[in-house]
Image (cartoon, rainbow, N blue to C red; front, side, top):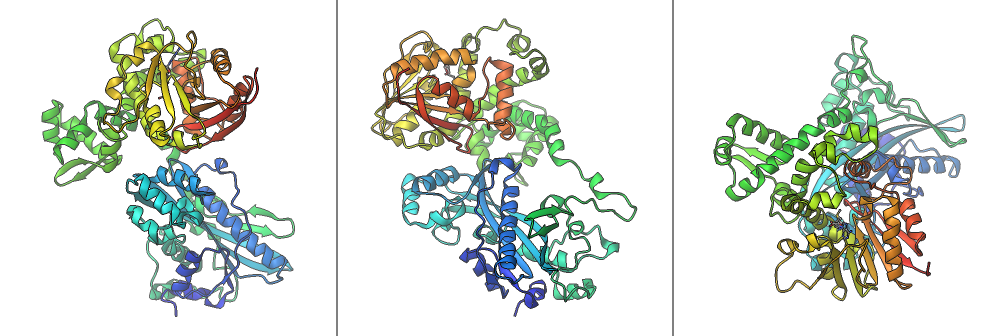
Length: 634
Ligand code: SAM
């Protein structure tokens, strides 16, 4: 018996689940659906960077899994299923897709990225209706995705490794299973729990309701079912057609779907193995004959149009130290905050409301308070405070970006135009005043703290005995390295103006392993001896000619077996996918003579100086990592 009448509709059909996942089988069996399991042979190898959003990848993989099974059953097993269900679950954090870990180190990398953070679990589902027409396989696909937000607690190293050694992470997207031991890592789940297990049952039922019980023409605007209709409702909605057909009553299935992006109808020809989209983004017409798609707001464009307002609201709230204030005082009303900050009540209230709507604050009858994420990232003493970088963005990058148009026209930095001073080199500009220098160092420090763990663990560096972080600034990465590799001696090398000012940003505590600080100019002075040279966000500051000078100097100091580790935002070779890195490259245009580079560009620069075996790891955090080894003398 099935409680749900839509699922009951499938009782007379040959339904196939194209998945070996025991969790998906359990979810569907538990609701009384009868189906056959034919695991898909489709390899999860689609190029992730070619998808604009992570869920698109999951949906496409789900479709391909279902199509592979339908095709194989039709051609090889000579029996055509009525319905094939494909699904793919991924975890996405910081726009990076995490699938199943390949080994324990990979599991460690994934889980430490999820630690203390909120991430999204997406399951893409494809419902494939199949028909054998003159020995040809015809298919119609309906697809959708479900997103659930999950937040992990802060995971200690000990807990992380204990969980990894349990073996549970290995066959699971993101390296955890919420239904077993992994549930202990989870602080909260927003959305469908079953989706995190691998199958969004609720959305699946709603989608079937849309397919089998389409709304009648007079109420076409209620295209989306907000709940699964009851049995009575089904009878009312049903037009009594289509029982004998494998295809649902889909007078244009795609038209019934309000989210055109995630639903399509595909006619699939098994011989040519090509899929012809017949219903993708088909605009529907309302009663007045006006195309619905024309009225849909272009959400991406609107978001970009407004982006600067949201950024500025964040910047101003940070400048006014509203997050620090609320952390210290607890929930407060706008009038009290305004009186303590000496700001207008009406202006403060609008800013607070905007911050709450942007998810930075919570608004309750008691007043405004910080979200967890504001406490961690936006307060100036938060564990991974981005306050320094936000203030740098407001005071330094904002005026520079105001001159982006001139930078694009002239192809050069805009420091003179933005700040009215004759521009020298980037760092002389930064270090001419104590205030600007400290602001810059705090900015570098906050990003380095946020990325240090991912940079330090992107590769196993335990074979190196000493490392020198050239341009290592406040030592944030250096301190993370000695924590992870206790036998590594790390030296930070930076300009004298920086080295003289690092002490206030260094970790305190007697258990902090030592890091050595050496001052000098890496273009002019000798650099300290080391097995591994680190350049984190250094190469992107300079044009190729300067990089040649620096790499040549490092190469001369390196014996074979020594390495270079770069931490940069690495562009894809075609320079078309990684928008954060491409915007950072614009950022370098307005203020430096440098730029962001692709993996191939870094490889070519390194190989010219005898460094080979170049490996690139995209961490999904703000910085990617390149490791190479000196194999021969130049
Ligand atoms: N590596 C740090 C990080 O990732 O946060 C800081 C990166 S910051 C963009 C560049 C660093 O290179 C600054 O700390 C700067 O002082 C240092 N630097 C610039 N020119 C230098 C030079 N000629 N010699 C030594 N260090 C230099």
